[in-house]
Every structure is written in structure tokens, then in C-alpha cells.
Image 1: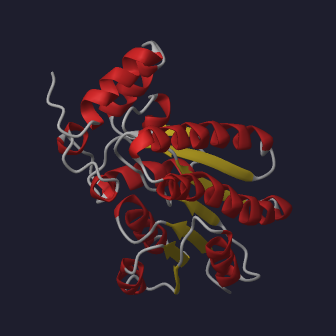
Image 2: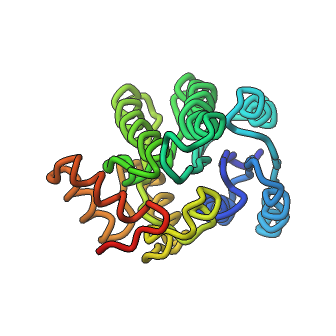
Amino acid sequence: MDKKLAVITGASSGIGYELAILCARDGYDLVVAADAAEIRVAAEYFRTLGVSVEVIEADLATREGVDTVVQAVADREVDLLLANAGHGLGQAFLSQNFEEIRHVIDTNVTGTLYLIHTLGGRMKARGEGRILITGSIAGYIPGAFHAVYNASKAFIDSFAAALRAELKDSGVTVTCLMPGPTDTDFFERAELGETRLAQGRKDDPAEVARVGYDAMMQGEPDVVSGWRNKLQASLANLIPSSVLAEQHRRLAETGTDEG
């Protein structure tokens, strides 16, 4: 019999890389995708774990890139769908290149939804499957100097909860992993490397991935990794948005060293 199949996006490094390892260690064959060449190196390691690996290097902000992932799946049944691809973009919104802004939205939102709509639809028709969506506690916070990313994660956090309600009793579970700052190359890619946000405490991506993976396998809904992040998410519901935005500005504005 064929092994069960897991599809993981954004698997070249960080949380997605660690999620792919967890899937492989549990015996799932993998379809892994990312927009970086490092995905091919990552795939070589995944194969040492004794599973079959299909590797896709494609821009997941585009419909064509997502279609490449779907084509790699072919007619196989997807047991686990881990929609993890995403990236950020620092600096002031009006100073950013709009094509870069659009790429963040198309990666974090449009491409993610297209993938879930396509493969999630198959899961629903089959009456079985687990979906893990990587959101963020950033979705609770107006992200001054990181505005588009935080807004995109607010969308994803909300979407995951809505999709979960729609799929109630369908046999398909939806879990939203909401990490805080994590020790990956995210901040450098988002041009936030010189900010207080990037220089602060970060979580281990392997631990974050384990929290999300376990929650997915248990069919849990939203899961925030780390007690500090849980506290921050709880406080965000009590603090006015204007205050949250100002706090985020102090962390994310390049060259800001205010207390």
C-alpha cells in the first residue's frame, strides 16, 4: 500500500522545514515546496528519513506555482496539508515597492487560499484529512512598519477559524498555528534585521513546529506556541489598537531605540 501523503509549503527552512521532518518521522511521504533553491537541499535530508519526497521550487505567490504543487500530488490522496509558506516586508508602507507588497499578499493570502481550496476540496470530498495553517500572533497586532504582513496574518487567523466552522463534522480538521518571533531567516528576508523586533528573544522553530504538529494531529483549533506569546495574544484583545500600533512601531522601525 502507498504511504500516507503530507504536503508542506515553505519547507526550505524554519518552521516548515521542521514540520516536514515531523511528517517524515511519522512515515508520511512528502510533497515539499518553497520559492528558494534551499528546498532541494532540504529534500535530500528528508529522504534520509526513509520516505519518498517530491520537491517543488516555485513561486507560491502565483497560481502557476501552486498548480505545480497540485500537479506533483497528482491523483494521490492528501492526508496532511501544511500551508506554511509566507514572508514579511519591513519599512514604512508608503516607502515600499508595491510589487513587493503584492508579493507578500499573494504569498501569504492568495496562494495559501488557492492551495487550500484545491487540496482541501479533495479532503472534504473524501471525508478525511488534516489541515495546518501557519498564522501568527502578529495577526492580533497592527504592525506599524510591518503593516502588510501583520494584516495578512490577521486575514489568515480569521480565515482558519471560519474554515474550521464550515468543515465541522466533515472529517477534515483545521488547525491554525500562531507563533511569535521565531529564530529563522524571516527577519533578514523582511528587511527587519536591524530592528529591536529582530534582536529580541525568539523561539526555536523545532519547538514551534512540534506544538503545531501535535495540535494538528489531535484536531485542535488555534494554538499559540510559547507562554510569552500566549500572554501577548491575550493582552492584545484588551489593549487599544492605537497603543498596539505604537508599541510595534518602536520595535519594527529601523533605527528606533526608544524604551
